[in-house]
Image 1 (cartoon, one colour):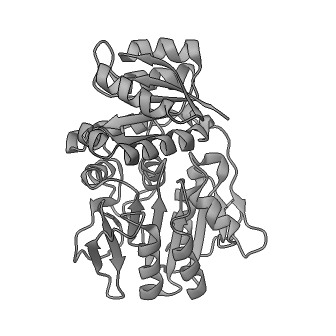
Image 2: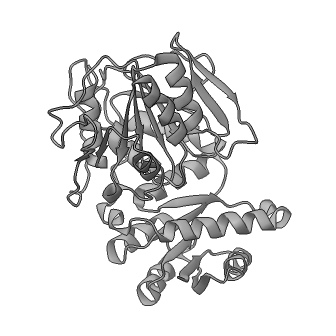
Amino acid sequence: MVVKVLVVDDSGFFRRRVSEILSADPTINVIGTATNGKEAIDQALALRPDVITMDYEMPMMDGITAVRHIMQRCPTPVLMFSSLTHEGARVTLDALDAGAVDFLPKNFEDISRNPDKVKQLLCEKVHSISRSNRRLSSLGALSSAPVSRAPVGAGPATIATPTPAPTRSTPIASRAAPSAHGSAVKRKPYKLVAIGTSTGGPVALQRVLTQLPGNFAAPIVLVQHMPAAFTKAFAERLDKLCRINVKEAEDGDTLRPGLALLAPGGKQMMVDGRGTVRILPGDERLNYKPSVDITFGSAAKAYGDKVLAVVLTGMGADGREGARLLKQCGSQVWAQDEASCVIYGMPMAIVKANLADAVYSLDDMGRHLVEACH
């Protein structure tokens, strides 16, 4: 199936270059271009593309505002282009909140220096998000308003969110899985909750972590596929929104209840039995830096059956082999359900490998985490 793409950018050079790269793929058809956000909305309504590539900084209307309007009027998977700066990271996270599915760094040097690599990555992204779950765009953005830290014993943060479409919590019948209502959630004093995710993960993590109380009983490690320039800004954002504390992990950090440590982009994060985090250089032989498999595998070695692992939305199968090691040690593995995933890749790999103890919708995941950890 040919993917129809609308290219939006105020730079004539970038519009032409992106259009040329995409048009070279016989399975992609650039059906239009736009020079600003307002034009993008009009073209999206008129042309009904399968995917929109979107710049942020444009005259008349910026990309984030355009994404919000498009999601309200004609929900369409959007791929944002962003700069690899702290401000670029903040803007990109705002765009993902507004409904964009994924992002790519906007680097003119890479386009001229590595045209084949850029072409492959851009076309892969376009194809993958064209298959994303469009229903999610109707859920809208989460509030970016910070919450005050909860006193001990307080409930989860209250975040203003639109009412989502109904989703199911689906236990895996072949295992001793938690029930859809959480009455049979396996409670135990977990020493670690480990969460891995990729495409769609920033918003998914925000939805899950904002449901946790400040006195959440277990330490948390987070692995999100993300560039090095983005993870610090993402951790800061989560820290403002959540009642638990969130920070970008540093070598030597100590795991503790009520703290989530986010793996830094471009590096690998491991944990040891003393509750210490190790940050290692990203191995070029590995596809993902950070890798969910690496973190899950170290958790299995360090904590055996005392880990609760969660795999959320994302492309590919990162996390499957790490989950296999965790299962061999007796730990629990949960997966996000297909209906609430942006990309049902990583969770599907867990389910197909028969590694999932339970499958839950995104909006139920936080509640079940609270029930399971005590």
